Image (cartoon, rainbow, N blue to C red; front, side, top):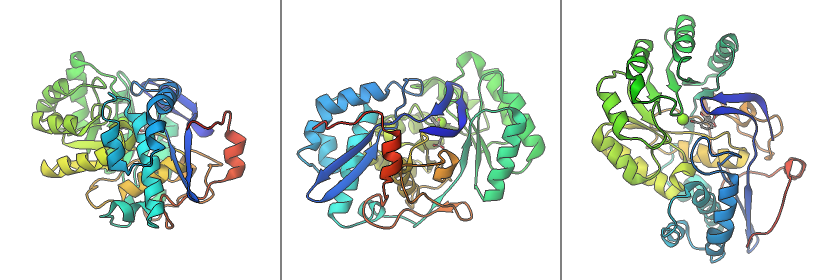
Length: 352
Ligand code: OSB
Ligand code: MG
């Protein structure tokens, strides 16, 4: 699926979304999910091809027995890692069981405030383009602006943004571009008054983040590093972060995401729901999660039209005053656009 505009992070530029959409049909119920992986393992260690392999070889046969999501998580525990593959199947079962219980996904999960607070994640562009996009985002009511940064470009980007928007709620995401040798450079970020700095160091690190946090007044938010509830526990115990960006895909699904939310609460931290440029299918899971009452910061759950002119769902989200309501209806509540799904499908098959 072509993106409306290229999305550039410290690890590369995306111009298309290449995604596996999963469909489960049983007893007149049709459930959907998607994998948050991309063609390359540049954000984390999984990519579309590893997901397909793990799903086909190990997970789909388990899904065929229709375990409830918690039971599924128990049954696939013996498979190490591969969280994005596991999440795509666990969430398929969440949609299935919400629908089987004739509930919306939020009612099936419980404890929703009824709407998600929404921030925007802006990829790196020419600085004038970024400033224009920020103004547009503010005009649309977004509650937090996040800009992507990378080593050597951070001061240019952040000083231009702060010169033009001195008071906005601003964060920056480095997607693990820095090392422990860059602490002096990273400390210069303190002057831009960010709500948090997201994942400055190695994608799997906690120890150096905790060391960095001691010399920094800007709170740290971890994204890539938090791949399990245990990692979240360790990160808070070590003071490696005050904020966590939850992505169900990275954590292996909704069950683990809820556990992380519990840990954040225990440590009186902050938590929000991130995004991976999802289609309308993945986005509807994210918006439901972002509406849970324990989520206390605006997330990266932009409405569909930030990324796609023609999404594969017929009922895209709309944002009002920086909030989005989860879909009504059962499960994730999306109406699939068979037209665009067909148009963008390059390969189709039955895996179990
Ligand atoms: O680090 O949060 C990230 C997109 C792809 C991979 C990693 C990240 C992102 C985003 C975009 O920041 C979030 C979104 O709008 O979906
Ligand atoms: Mg991030």
